Image (cartoon, rainbow, N blue to C red; front, side, top):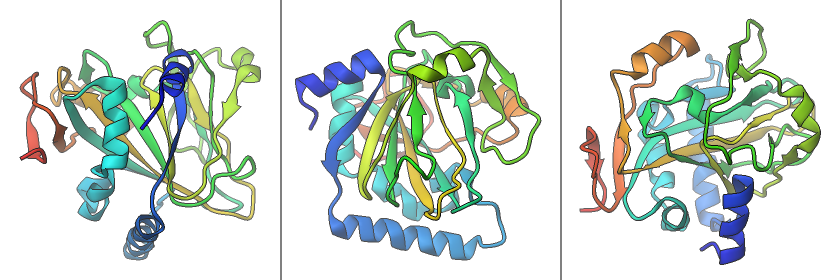
Length: 253
């Protein structure tokens, strides 16, 4: 669980590195699931895989671990929907950059509120492309202007305009396998390419308060801009669905 000081850091900076680390057995299960997935999809680009648990339901159980859910409750309340997951698997030497962005630029959630768990499978160091963020960039709770990038070797095609003057304020997040960070939907963040000799693999899980609506129809307009599907399975993981979402499965029963 997060203590009061850690919750204050999250509220003020927009990101907290959790004091929690999953057990060795759970880290082993993470690695086995990833190894199996990469083998089965060896002919695909696995640098960034959106909609991960829809593609492979083996990754759903990690998002339901109480160690994670209990901390999410502290930040967004008791009524929680798991609505998304992604794999970020930066290969050694050639791992792609993730341009600076706000997560909310991509998401059809109304009202816009969500948190992201970034769960490390590999060790994340300062050399292998860790998540970077601008502390406090979430505080005005608004989406800044983004632009579309027409370039290769990136995981996302949208980036923040006018980010260069803010980069000197950035921090980065290092993690051991089984550790995770939590960040706000409005936070400015990204990551550099991985030129090191170590792979950097991690999972993101997205949770929103069940007082918000995931607008599947509205998502189609965003899909045209970003180039991939946002049609997601919604899983109720705590409390009740107060916004009448299209719940795929209720895990609270």
